[in-house]
Image (cartoon, rainbow, N blue to C red; front, side, top):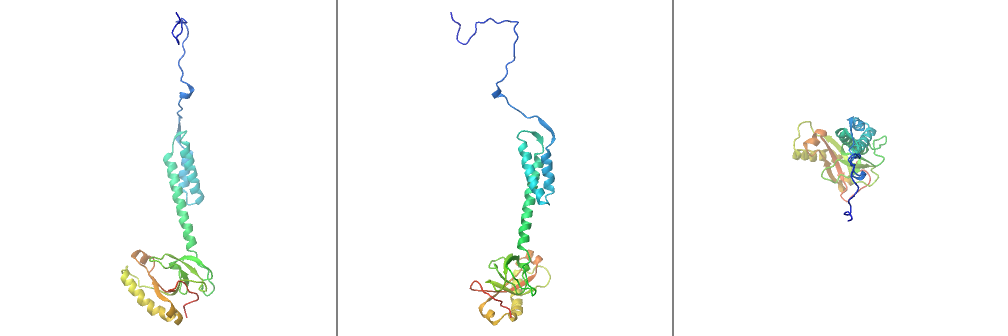
Length: 236
């Protein structure tokens, strides 16, 4: 009688050696051995992040932090927190540098000739305006920056004069507006030509809240072109 399929009829020798069963190669799992100490790149990322006062260091912090986190996929080692901190600090420093660069571009002093007249178009904060400056971009409820340009170019507004309100605590918007209207009528009207008086509209820029008041108490008396733009100066 034939033995059942899959069985062996060979006798078992009790003296024959036995071998342990090994798993198939495909079933093996690899667990990386822990590496002592903290990841060097993570430490470097944190140091560069702290030294992000230099833009290059901020970029290096981000790169090293990302590489250090990537190494954790195949290496068990401390340092994840330092790598993340380095990346965060690097990003914050880069954002700060970006803001500073943009602010520097916006606040560059406009080019002026010997008499103080603007000779080329540039962007600037309202606080940089001077009497006689022609500008555009103030047609908003809150004005932070404007475009200053030569008065021979088409522009929307011109500064007639500037005066400061008395020092003291914030008096409230209503009182500031009343003082601005009175002051600009008294100080600006005598300085403009008859044509400007007939064709342009008077207005003013003023600190609208206590925060702005702490930065500047100046009232900027302005004449605006009601039909969009005008050319030439409005001053006598």
